[in-house]
Length: 478
Image (tube, rainbow, N blue to C red; front, side):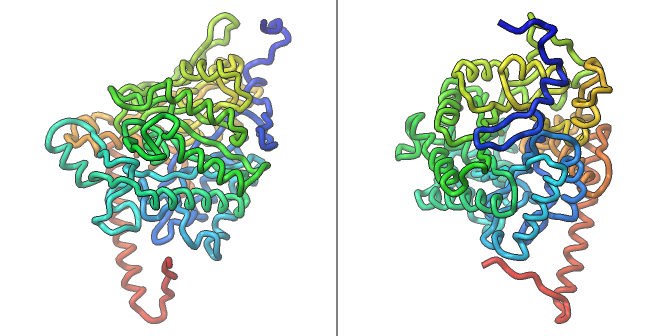
């Protein structure tokens, strides 16, 4: 039974509660700045761009989040998901590269909020040209299953050019993936971050191993639900051996693939979560869902929906259920796990977030798009005693100009335009500007084209300068 109303915490107090993770790390509150790809790193090394991150992460670090999770850090420079990802490479633990990582950790945690690094590998989602690999080198996947987006010869041709058919990962490839993730975790530790998160959702490589759609292997890494977990189990155990508490280790998982047929089911997703919360090695689990071929995930189909105009009221009898994956979270709750659960997507209001925590659906609340459009949302709105519940919500917004995505006949291009709106706004923040929530997709595309042309001109000039003997040349990777 719940306590009497007069003894219950109010909405602001619920989200402001500290949380001690199993590793001993204390989070000052329940609001988490989730991973969003900043797209700000530069070739040839794709080290943390400290000049940009000084602006971007200072804002997040001083805005009273309970935890900051960095944008994706790719663990193999050959396979990026998009140009501009920060990358772990063979020289990252050496100077001057390591100092850039240490600076990133210091900037992010300067305000007292712990920060962990999200480690990722895109697998079959690494497009041609994104990564330091030969043009004829295909990305890896558990099985050679190409991405399918849309119908018709034009979509198929575009996908073949952009992504192609991945090659099946060999056992040597898998060992290399494990080693790279482990080195990435060590880099986070050496740099001074509080821990790391393994990205096992949204159709990235770890998610590909966990899904029967992309994992059709019959060896130790596939064929049964238990064997599809083998790679993730190896990673969790190896990283925990190298990075014991108080280092924080988190995993982000799909609740399901939300495909028409053949993908990860919620039943199998629940068993994957069960292992994570019972293994004794993981400090919190983030629940999300969907992939590039998703047909029904609310998270992946929400760009055209306007967010809240007013905050819902909390009630002892009716749950708000603002987050996208509450049905799955209810099933996780029935596991009676002591490991905290973080829910992804949908949270906009203080009362909605507080209701998720009060109900036991989650212990942590993820802020993604809202953290881009309002970097200071926790400090200025959600945790502020001067802002009443009915006014405590993220600004109402909808990505404008989505008609452009609909008129582009090639889905692999059109489907990615909405997220470009958020990439562009993170680049604005990195350049010391404010986010522009009213910017439309056509305007973002125009600005990106202009920036690309300008960048190409600058790179051409730099190559010309490098031909002169007095101009310093960057060291090459081994």
